[in-house]
Image (cartoon, rainbow, N blue to C red; front, side, top):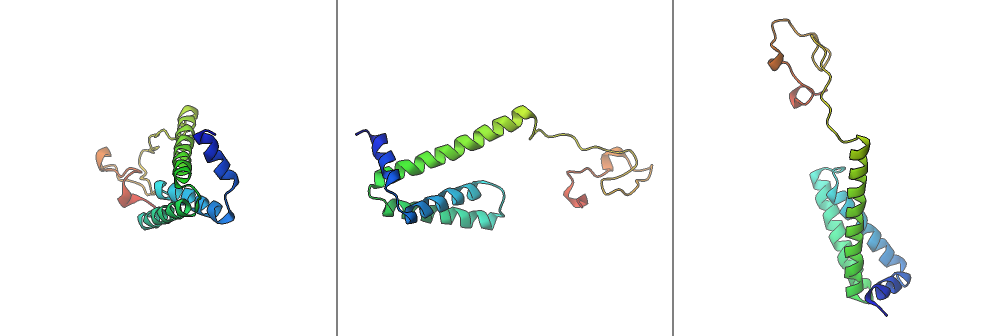
Length: 131
């Protein structure tokens, strides 16, 4: 049997515990990579992913098959993220658009005086003037 056949046969014999560890590893990796969580939450997600991955490798019958499954999962998540990014760029999402500036009104809606120069006016990207 080929190496890929061995990996696929190990998928059929996985227990519920191994499936849970694989799920935690994938979710921990996804949350650790993404920006959904704060930095402390990302570190915790990375730790969960690492522990779950090591546990998955220990619980499997063949550690080499487990390592290949982990590599395939990481590559699969990377391909998914890359394809989602390419599709969003092709559709037009993700491109930065300039903020709409209304003459005489700052981003909070308060009127500006006529003496305020345009370069001194706050922009939407200025964190000091965010709502």
